[in-house]
Length: 334
Image (cartoon, rainbow, N blue to C red; front, top):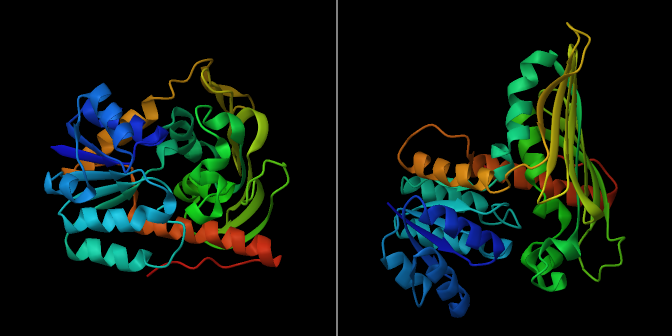
């Protein structure tokens, strides 16, 4: 199996490292020096152009470029006969998404989108614990981090997530919360949100958002997102008719993580996970193995292209709601 990774930013380099441990791996980036350095570090091939890289006939292509270029690169990969794994979100705009997915399906090519939080041990435990709390009623999720510290090797103002023209902003960049809540509770039928740029970080996208979702299942969920917290935090609380699930993660390298359940049947808190050092590389490793499994027809929990398009619709509806002050029904590509 050959895997090509397009894009050698921080996440692309991580994908190259994981792919190289499992398959013959190639690398392409418009920055040739970055591609050669990444390839040398991982024993991978490099190429002078995307066309030359695709002529190498990879079975799978990982698209780790800015959001606004995802569909263009992914379509070229599909046209060359490859399955694709696209960094989240699938795009920064719904325009062209349905046509791309139809194009891939017509050629019997698989499309998946990176949502590595599905492989985080806390999210896995929350998913597994849902039957223990009865009928799900509502959930509160949060993610906060300090944007200038997220990529210390670069000026944060030049990153894709800091610029609207490249699909940035905390809502799209942190679509993980929309993903795992949709994975838990099903599709979203309406969105009400507020969002703003309040942190004085010299960026032209939102650095704060509060998003309320109504799922078709009837579950209500609330999401807090920001680029402003000096101490990284992530987590979720889910309340059901028969109990409560709580996940709290704090910090990075190390990430301290706790998952607990309060079943009404016992009336006592039970600890499902307690770690002062979550291995942050493990979800990405499991993600890459799942991509290989998917290409070979084996079971996996990857986010498929159609579901990813629906989640993009939710994220864009959140932006629209924040701009209009009204509840918005997501547009889902057919």
